[in-house]
Length: 179
Image 1 (cartoon, rainbow, N blue to C red):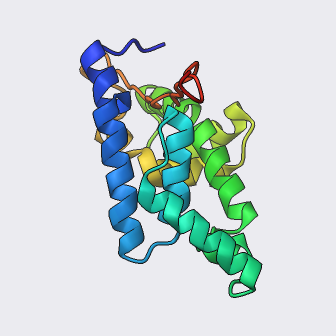
Image 2: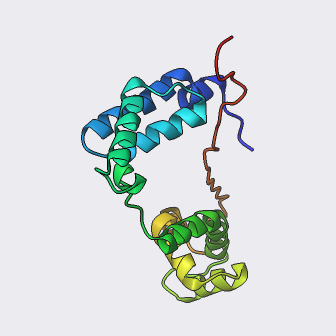
Image 3: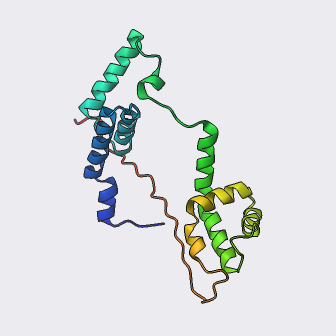
């Protein structure tokens, strides 16, 4: 597990970072991205922040528009146009598989397996018990450093890879209303 310094913690999760995220949402919403309103609500939930006036006003407008029948549903109100479910599942699967695939490809490269041979993709897929297509997709997206590794490690170097996912952070424990 990675330990962040207080400075990095503050940069990612402090009040100033939250205010920057909310300002980004406001500007993006003003420019026409309806989904930015939901992003603002999400940020407020994540950091237990008060919903900014502009976002609260928009939520009230949406509620009135729904009641009056001027908009169909929340999908229209928030402008949700997500990729289909299968695509989102694939992205999530590849994200989960990426560290192991990159590690396996690095090991195979160090063993002397050539990148031009189909063998490296087949062997990685077989060893990890996943599809070759997933291995290829991950390699195309994140495998650049593997291309730079000399085949078979002729200089006997130690190669290190790191794949870091910044953990989700959520503030909690704040009172909802002041006494």
